[in-house]
Length: 197
Image 1: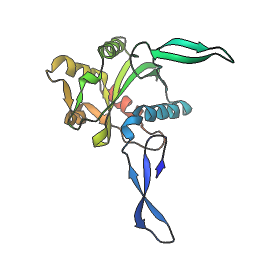
Image 2: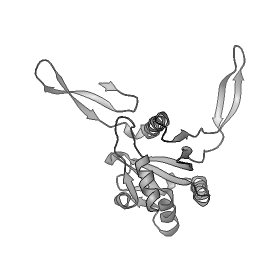
Image 3: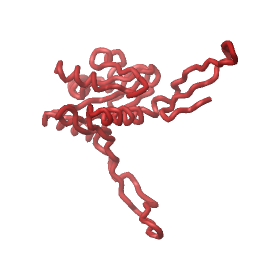
Image 4: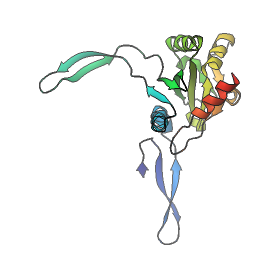
């Protein structure tokens, strides 16, 4: 079995090909754990190709202990608070903010996965004229969607349900197919959603 950095694995199948060649089968069992990694790789691709400047936002930490014996090294720390959203940057002269979420639910995306602070932050981004999106992965369906944050916020504010049905993502979002480089090419959908909003 070969394991790649994005969590995908290739397993030898029992199917034999001619000339001692072996067929490989594709497994995406661990894919949900690597959504952020895939977005980071995509953002690096966008930066290299001068398409966008989008970075992973660091989670704030509180340093408790530092070892100064050779060079300063943090030996104990804890997360002081939840960061607002996962990614932010600049795209075509506009501020962009993205929150990435992954769910193992087959039927719906629970709104409880999004904190009050994240909702407030994304509402503020929209009010200031920024671009705000969610990238949501349904692990059991092996599907990933990009959705304008306004759509999720409107659902939360106007619906009684505490989760968004999976089928509704076909209407409110755009499916992003995984590729090689970039792994999640989401910028074309940012363009499309932004043009139509």
